Image (cartoon, rainbow, N blue to C red; front, side, top):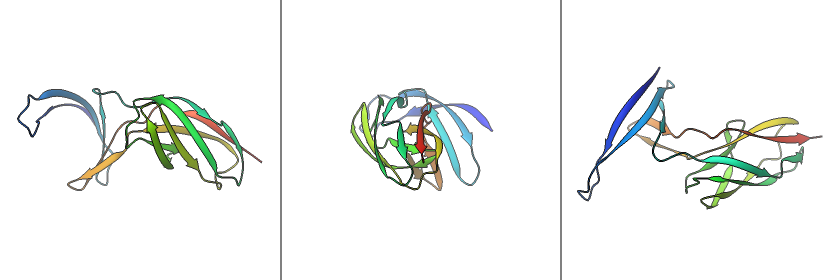
Length: 133
């Protein structure tokens, strides 16, 4: 189920509220994915290296936009250990047990849990990472 939701953000210091628009979907089991239109989520422009040999952990560098402290890189949907260096660069370690073949790499601006629900930002478009024999 997906719905458009308009929310107003209240500031604790009494400042003015601003309207935020979200597309929400209920994924079952207490997971609600929220994609905000303001501010934009992260984009993934490039990864380096783009290939690795099976059995070798890889330190991957990703370039893009809108990276924040909770941005995480994933490989085929599995979050990897990620360090955000700045708003356009992060590094992540792809484990050595990744199977031979091509894999989708994405970035996503983290998630948080509140009141038994997990709220997550939308992932970026994927780039391909290849593991060779």
